[in-house]
Image 1 (tube, rainbow, N blue to C red):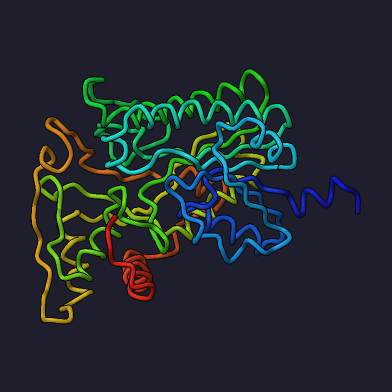
Image 2 (image 1 turned 60 degrees about the vertical axis):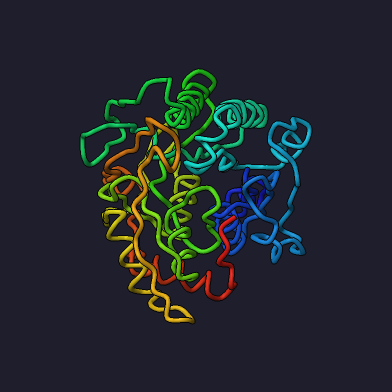
Length: 341
């Protein structure tokens, strides 16, 4: 077997943000396929515990560093056939409270990754977000829809704008420089290892319910979301990395099982039930202005059209919302990790 054939069958992947919630699951799945996996993560939102069980493997390497460290990024990228770029500022709470960090991390970090990937002609899969659809009202969201964002005076939209620039940059590298890129717009990915630290709603609700505390619903609770299990998200990311047809394209990656946040809170309360001293959680509705900042805006619905990725990859979600909630409750119960940092 030639070296080229071997690399096609057993490629080396570099995952930026690979110690995070999605990245650690992706690393496991790639290793199970026989790939070599390199990870770079500064552990600002990721955790070494997510990948500790992989550290002794000869086909896995972890670098504790920021992607802004050009020397480390270059060394890792020089060995990679594919780069999956997951490193980003994440979570509404972090975005609202640290807008400078959000914009710099997303735009400047992605530029470094693309520049380095181009140096070694590694394929890049960019993890984008449903946030780029902004306040769009055309449901379901299609990849070629027009985009409506709020004013620049509301920094909540800085995240969406920065991720749009990431997409523009990636596609510019493809069209102008021939860099093979594919873009995944992820819709509310959830599952084991996700924390509620930065505002992610399911882990936050589950942790509150397990402590018998009120589940804090922001806004009026009528906003709806479609939650995707991390295993399905990982399948999509690997599929895009492996597909030549996906190069230069943007894909929605999400579920189409929609639920309001109020209904989600009630389902979690019903599943967790009564805690040790007969405490059963209730729902507390908190206005956006009190939860985040005056004038905060949110997307009323996030419902993706996934026909494009189904056409290209034959991909569909396989895990239901019931399974997602069972996994979330089981993972926090098993680790007894019910403290929201």
